[in-house]
Image 1 (tube, rainbow, N blue to C red):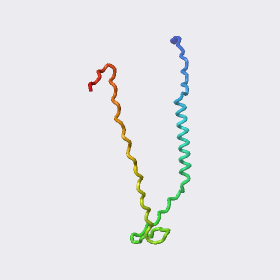
Image 2 (cartoon, rainbow, N blue to C red; image 1 turned 90 degrees about the vertical axis):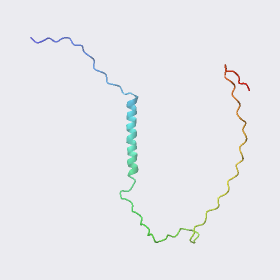
Image 3 (cartoon, rainbow, N blue to C red; image 1 turned 90 degrees about the horizontal axis):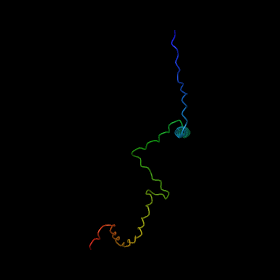
Length: 110
């Protein structure tokens, strides 16, 4: 004869954990990462696909003429610096007052 089944205690199914503040922060950070990635792509897509051309190098023997709107070979000299204004001396400050003795301590002789 087969063994009889005993009475089992039925445990209720465990409740699903509820979403809390940290789950909301996780979702918020995911949205911020997606928005940052989108903005980075939009900024990157503004650049042209081809590399820029390299400007030609100057020869070592050729001297370039300075761009001077007044003409001539030398640029105009900068104006002479103005002397700094005199600073008045700081006023004399009286020495700080001595601290009174704390309660319970003898007064110093002096």
